[in-house]
Length: 312
Image (cartoon, rainbow, N blue to C red):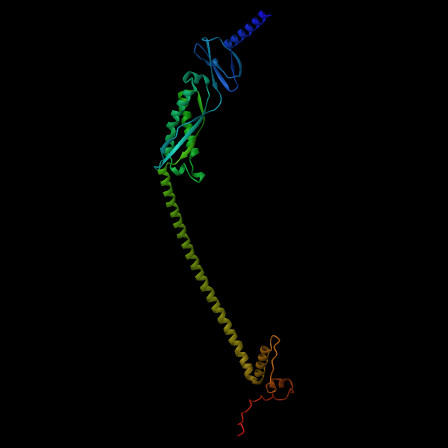
């Protein structure tokens, strides 16, 4: 029984060693390059996942590479913009191995690929120096040129990598961070203050011009209204004078009737609003007009009482 267990364990260990020597695994997120005496050819690349056959080392050697995107963040660096401002920029790029065979022949190690890409990424930072600060940082998104810079940087890197034959592909290039140093911040604030002062002065001048135009228009309208009102008033006065002249002519033909009308008007004003007005008997001569016959002459107006001397 003991011998059987020993034989079984030996068979398992032998199978494991043979599997390790003659088989290798490729995961779904990997590619493998199997070389023969360190030489690779088109048939050396294994892209399908699963178990693959190989001969023991040193005949076959297997190197695995990741298919996934890899991120490279470059160091922070201070640059000069086209308008003489200083900015601190941090860039990044994402890349992957597009041709595992070329990559194995030229670079072999992903760390070396990172060094090569980092060197090229620093070289294209000169693109940022061609732009002004307001094209990098601005409240108006239409004035910002970051997308244009990133597209140019990606095109430059792709051209450089195509010539190198590294088997790498750059998926994206971006500006991760833009920081203004203290000196640049002070200049930016001064520029902002100058700009705001200029805008406020322009707004003030424009407001004064509009106010002057409004005052002129209002003054012109006032003069037109006053002239129209004066002409209208003169017309009304002329009409009133003509009507008054006609009434005066009528009153002159019948003076007693005119006096009667004036007294009636006086009574209407005095007795308005339920007013109680007490008159003496002598002052009621106006009522005689209602008691006389039509052919009778107008009653005489009462005379004021004459004063008499007091007895001695």
